[in-house]
Image (cartoon, one colour):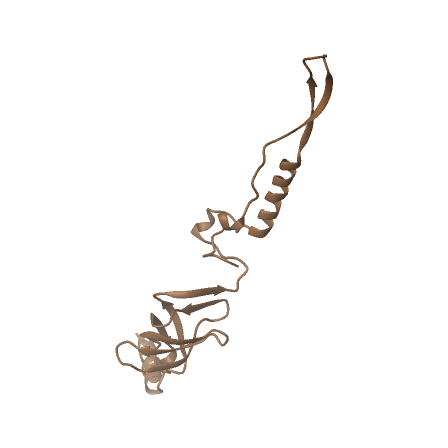
Length: 169
């Protein structure tokens, strides 16, 4: 019983000292300063202005679209300490991390599209320039000789045919 009374007394003392809990607010994004990784917003229910809302904390930054609804957090009740939690619509998500996994990693690693295209086109060029000798026999005077046969022509690969530009690095 003493432990519970002590916990209650600690909570009560913190309340008296003015410690406030974090709060969540819905706000509409009004502007974004991507260089500073901040935005300004206006509260949906109360029209309170929020300036300098942080767009991330080090490894992930979200750039919301202007006029989209966002969920922001307010630390310790201080509106100067606000941060973006999520947004209904975003222009960009920047992740500065060593590893990102999508779909549980079932699709494997990210393809280096430029290098892949170069290697595929090297194969296409080798295929298109390949020749091999063919022995021919003439009909009239039993002419025998050699000729060169070529294979069909393959088309060059264009990364735009298979690149998904919605995910970039």
